[in-house]
Length: 368
Image (tube, rainbow, N blue to C red):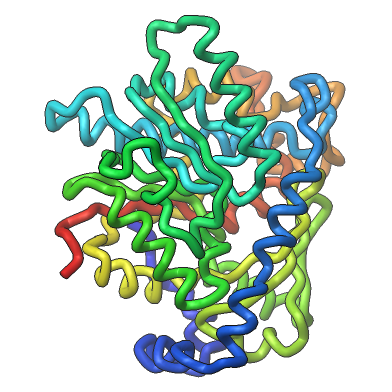
């Protein structure tokens, strides 16, 4: 579990009580009108227009290794909670993937030997590409192939169960990777998302995900002394009226990640998420910042082998470094007569990925 030494967000929020913040969000015609519009169409348009590049194209990316590293983190998280369920004797697990995008995690689920994946995403083009990727996987007739169905929907505004071919299907794992923060646009959207998660999940099942850490974002914003901060690979900027006192819901900022993301997101205040989740029978059972999670997992032989296979770290030294040599000072210190090369990431990439947190909730009971 992560330490609790970072209190910047509580200070920025002027020590408001979570219950008071929830009450502030409830009701009001003006807020209802804003919720109907929201940023959903902007987000969907961004991802619909994002070009799908092949492997060679991705290799040209400034954040090629960072993207692979993020995929490794997701693989570790998926394997961890699949293993927890399999340790109970469960097999043929069913997965609900919220914000599945173009299907980048399908191969990870296949390697985890699940029996079914239902994927949803707000971007129609992404769902079309996801379905095409799934069909090509099945054409290979892999022994670990699974059934799947995919739908375009805003999971923060609609009941997902109404879309399935079998509305009574229950899932062992619900996964939401790098997308959960969109539901914190408003309290009704956050509750809709959590209701979708809970009513699809079996008691004893897990909801796992990755999301930016609100504490870290606000800490960096305060240190920057303005309304934005970042480096050569990422930038986060806030409207001026959000800097001093961001609301518990709808704390919007614009996130830019080189060649991948450039759209609005929302702060997810984890204590608030934890409290809301209990209403839906979900108990927080784990959270770790990416750096801590990496340090915990990297020493297992299978995890280390996967790091290598996924090219999740950049070789140093190399003739073709993706950043200036000064960004690899820590890697340089690791070299010796016996160690001629190490795997690492540039300073700017480490800084960008350490904004993120992995989390896991367990469904303890059906909501009353």
